[in-house]
Image (cartoon, rainbow, N blue to C red):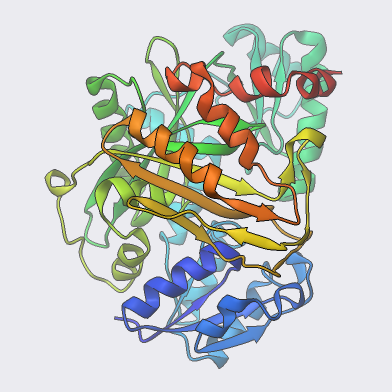
Length: 455
């Protein structure tokens, strides 16, 4: 087992990894930017090093500085968390070439699955359903128009190297496809340094269901059941839950087995999530793999009783999985609400600033993962998420009631947050009856913003 691990991240996920390490008796090395200097959780690390200014490209994304900190701090492994360098295959390769273990998948699998076209091809090869679309990237307008005519409108233009909704556009006819194609290519180039895009049939009114899985170095891959991430805005998840409500048992089983089949074919180990779209007839289609731990991993932890961060560390250290597929139970229902420092009434404008007061809810089955505290200053330089509120109850109705109560208890003063929006969503009949699709939030709560974006 590792004696010392560097955590190449910040905020909530850095604190989460740090706590897991402390429980395992592993020393930690933290890194921070000038903007995060003085963060309270840094005091829990055995050592902490500043790796640059506030701008992520000059600090958290500088793998040379991260690796230097690991070498100075005598770290044997690096946990990347999520975001930043977590899905950078080159970083993973450089870590291992420096004799520092990367707590994540092999760089070969990460590179393969990180290329969405290659991942689609692999899925098709092993019999995992994919959304109809182009065989590879489309480079010209004429090629895009030809593919769109073959698969039918509406179509979705997606960045081959992207994620998080960047480089993604919907086209409903030839006219909109011409403009959307150029916009998607430009945005993809700006966001990922790669302007390649491909086309998929746009599945109307889908649900977003993902499967959490983990594998070891010995070819064992198991799924830890699924999460429903349908409640989102502009492809950014707001609320996640497990199990996916109203999903037929045979469909649930098939989705989970497809995820395992795909990861095994990619020679994958450590934690990963395989994402699918599910249409109204319960047909499911593979869309991508997130080759890292995800924001919503506590949902899975609550329903399985497993600690995913500890499992990641053990697998990276060469230990086999301590259980088999039949040992993974699913108990009750868990729901997570992401708490973002944003103002939904002003187009989700970021709301940085000082948190004057915070009151955290509690009680059985209630968990709040956050790094903030009274007096903490939310930085404008990074992602706006400041915490995750998770509840666990025997039934979905009880979980919804518990989450609504916990959101009422949660008090964050000094900045705007998404708490009120979460409360409204949880009370809406469409959510309660599990009839929502991925555009539910925009249609129901943000119609004026949706119309403005279409102009």
